Length: 146
Image (tube, rainbow, N blue to C red):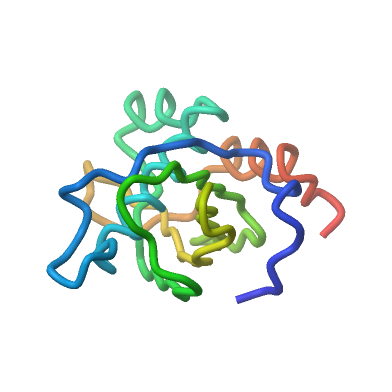
């Protein structure tokens, strides 16, 4: 995982509430819920770049290949979370997405990373990232010079 830059560098952020159902028997948010929070930010990212529309039309989508989370402080109910997502690298068949979760009451609570591959659901095969999608992300993230 690359060093996490300042949170303001994330152009896509969304907010959600910690729900009582997110808690586990030990009284904090269950570790699996963090990946749901990351998914919320990933979908918000796709929406912001209007990629979901492209995915639906083409039957091609970016899907998780690998994901991880570093837990910094536990989360509890009630709380408001800000979740950020950004793409840091694009390769031929995949891209790397970084995440953060910031708690209103506890500050930065976790950071994560995912590898997203592109998949053609009509052929059930991994594919090269469509040029249009890669260019849209590179422009949005200012990765053109990299």
